[in-house]
Length: 329
Image (cartoon, rainbow, N blue to C red; front, side, top):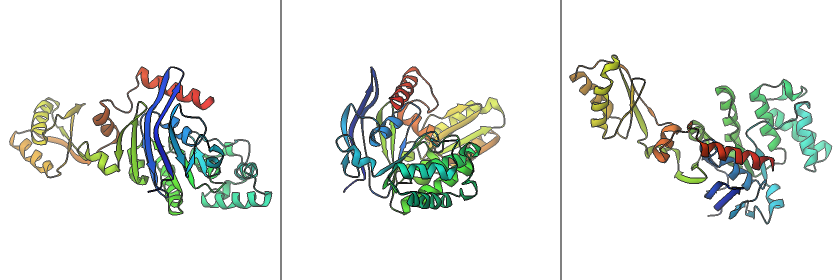
């Protein structure tokens, strides 16, 4: 199989800090590859290497069949990039931003204006086209930023945490746009901290932690590693939590986690839920809350790495600083 994106053993060091330690991944043409990981995992470093913004210390990668180091110019003609923060010029209007990029890409003035009008219409920004970008909402700026990355008709698009900080409605709007792009045959590499986002968009997922790939597969396959679903039980009386923990743990065959009186455990068989209810009723434990939900990214991460995605330690801080320094280099 030929891949639009292929990386083998990517390593990257910033001074004494190792940001990547042998990252390998592939993405067939016309698909969405989700790259998941907490802050400092190495997602942005990987994206910047594939987009030819920085060179790897070791390893090899091709994008569109071209080597990202030896044939960087050819790669840049094929790709678009939207970073974690909107990169538009706030003093220019929406139209002026897109026309400027078109002209920088070598388009004629007429072609640049036509492409700008097309993208503004596609992204629902026609009414704001003549306003300075500084007057746009956060969601509008992200849409304009994504439109800017598409001015050159890229075959491959890198989206580095494009929905961070957006409200649910704006996030959903960007998801619809990404779906439309892949329907047109565009290959997308999407980095995110949200499993829900990967659920909605990614055909395949790579999980990175501390610069290494620790898991690879579909969203359902990753969730299956931690049980697929999570059973949550909160007793009416907080003092009954230990009893609930014992019963739930015995039936689930796993050690539950208890936080603020809420007992939760990953399960593979939804039929376990009524069995828990019966046992608790027999034990005389009244239930105040009972739910069955899909596993979250944090639970997947905890199962895979032993730490939660929002855990901040010295190593993660150092990797974040290293990536930021690499972005400024």
